[in-house]
Each structure stands twice: as C-alpha cells, then as structure tokens.
Image 1 (tube, rainbow over the protein chains, first blue to last red):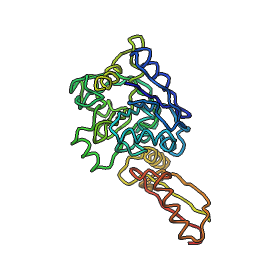
Image 2 (tube, rainbow over the protein chains, first blue to last red):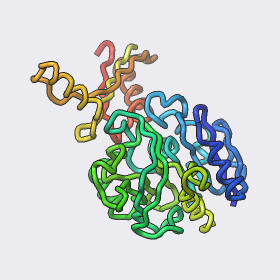
Image 3 (cartoon, rainbow over the protein chains, first blue to last red):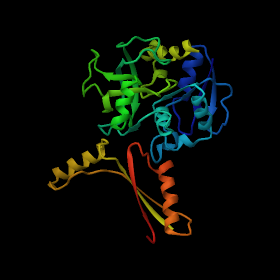
Image 4 (cartoon, each protein chain N blue to C red):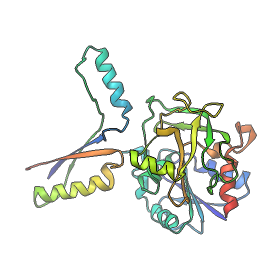
Length: 228
Length: 81
C-alpha cells in the first residue's frame, strides 16, 4: 500500500509521519504538496499536525479548501483511508469529512504532554491491532483540541461506535482531570460513519520508537496496514 | 457595499474564553455580567447591486467559510439595510 502525507504551509509533523512510515515501518510513502491535485497513487492519506495557513480564521478552515483536498475528499468517498492527526483532524472536521469540531482547550493553555487513552472500538481499520478497553500512551500538543459536537450528533456517533479513543486516567477511568482539553465525553479520536476517515488529537507519529518514549503509535499505523 | 459579520459560539457550546472573561469581570466587581461569549468581527466590502444581493453573498460566504455552523452562529449587518 502506498501512503501519502500532505504538507500544507504551516504543517509541522509531515516529516515525522514520513519518518515513521518510511524509516521505522519500511513503507512506501509519498509526500504530497497542498497545491497538488493528484495523490500519486496513495491509497491512504495522512493529514499531519501543525498550524496550516497559520490557523487563521479557525484551525483547518483554510486548509480544507487547498487543491489537494478535492482529491482527499474523493478518496474518502471511494472508501480510501484518510487519517487526520491533530491539525489534520481539525481540517477533516472543517471539511465535514468527520463529525463535530475542535475548539479552544478548556484551560485556554497549549498542552504538551503524554496522555493515557482507552480504546473504545477495536474493530475499525485504525484500531484493529488493539483490544477494547486497552490503554495506550501517546503525546498530545495542541491549543485547540476540545472536541465538540451538537448533542444529537454526539449521541449518534457514540451509538454507532465512532468514538475510537478516550482520554482516561492511569487506571482507565474517566475523570475531569484525565481529560486534558475538556473534550465532550473525553473524546480523543473519532471515525466517520463508514469507518474509513479517522481523526485524532494525539500523535502516533511521535510514538514509534522506544527512545522517543513509546511505540504505541505503531499499533495505529500498523492497524491501517493490516487492512490493506 | 460594506458588510459586517459577527460570528459567535452557539448557545450550549462551551466557550472557555467567554467564561474566563466573565469570571474576571466578576472579580473586578461587575457582578451584573452574564453570558459572556467571545466571537469574531469580520468587516468586508462586497460588490453588489443591492443590499439584498450583498446579504445573500455574505450569507453564502458565512456558510462556506466565515463561520463553522457546527459550533458557531453568525449575524450580518449590511450597509443600506
């Protein structure tokens, strides 16, 4: 399977995703420029973290209209896999490829720390190497990661199992303290209705080697690979 | 035609900035402050033959880009209306 990693002006983690895929996982990954109109054969596209277009207006609001996004939307409509990490998650919400939106952290502060996440649905292409209830550790680094969705929509995505990861404490329990940004229902990752578009605030690409403090990110990338 | 766009968080959507400001106002003694919401003010000119046309165009701009209607409401003020 060929991966594509999009670089918008202001993307930061595109190179880290490419490093994780190419160097650590030995994958064929192509770098895509925001002005590209084609995906160059990529079957799985990653929208990385960063501050695309300076986060002007709203995070992800301008990136969603980049030329590459037409091809990304087409890939998603055809059932191809699209993964948005952090700013990429914000872009996918703005593009309405994922439900809900991401807004300013409850604390109003930028947060950079390692968090514990509980796997809520392990039967999706992004989580199939994990087990339901399993706890994983990944870093987060964002100022606008508070997940919001209108009440009805929230109920629907919960019922359909579209919530993939939740922020929890070390024992796997939910608490206000363990929810770093104040996300509704402590949501850290969601999927679309057809489970081929995924968004998460934590950074799997920063957790792919033991020397970086953990390798749980490999389980997410590896899951996508297994389905291919 | 001059158009003013006011974008505010929808009722029910958590607005941590609004809440922090409200608390600050209260700690300054402005106990009357209620329901503080922080939004955006966007000023633009729209080429249009009439105020109604400018409003329609501005509405389309809001729906597509200027507001995220999942979490935000918008209100317009159009010159000449």
